[in-house]
Length: 129
Length: 333
Image (cartoon, rainbow over all chains, first blue to last red):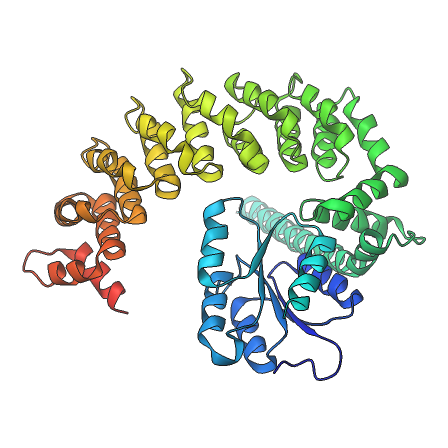
């Protein structure tokens, strides 16, 4: 089960860009989610393993472990195998999007991104669970 | 004697004064950078509130106003949709846009360049025609700032204008390429067109950017460019095929392994590894044993990507060489 405990779903947001991380945390926090923040891939993996959030929003280009590798490792763990994952990618190429899906991501958003759209995707994905 | 002592004392005093000045300057600049970073950190929540909730701008000191504008400008490169529109609104209503538009009319080139640069971070699409016109400015720094800002604003209607400025050498090639890259797939038709341009430097930019924003449907252009008379273009084509190439690119890339330029051979080897060209493995093994450093290393790594078992077997042979050994060691980790 997830870390939500109460009624508040828990979202893991991971990005090494502090501007984006704070913006994502603000938008999702305002939308009623509890947001765990990670600044690199290793921290994201550790937080996901410890708290088992309801959903993760992961940047692709992060230090220590990139977003693709975090997804692969989350999919390899029993406790996080089914966690919905949205990738945020600054890269314009379709091959990167394909790589994200191949690694096991459920959805992606390209940067520059709309926080409102991210919120809508998160809501839709959690509603499908 | 006393004159020499006096001269030496003067030099020592001058050296001391110079060192003291440098140390003070270093300390002052470091402190100023720290203050700026602190102010921007403090302004970030305010900027987010402005962008996301439409909060009013409170009374701020001039330094905080500058920091807030910097943070908003930074966000303009990272967000889209309604958030981006509210950033534009902040600069329109706060007077930032008007100040930079005025700057674009300045007689001083540095002011026009600064304005052209700033306009790219204000999320105000109405400045696009003015920036496009600035690509004709008599000053090269203004033109460079304008092309950078046009890329930032990602308006696909300026694709042809950007390409024209690239072709006419009015802007630095790298900056024009970066701007076209930010336009993404909207730039593909123009990139395909200039991939056959008479100027090799233009063809190289076209091939490089096409390799990043194109898809497998654009591999035909790269295959033609792989036979280009200019080695830089052939290298860019091989690099592009590593991303957008499919199995059909394999014969041309195998042929490129015999290119007279070592860096083209290296890129061709990497591309063969990326597309998983199994039938190229024997030739790649041979190159890994006999070629110069870069193509040999790239070939060994390509074999590791395509067929790790063959790599390990070849690396165990008596004449394997350093590159096959290294690739096999890395593959076994």
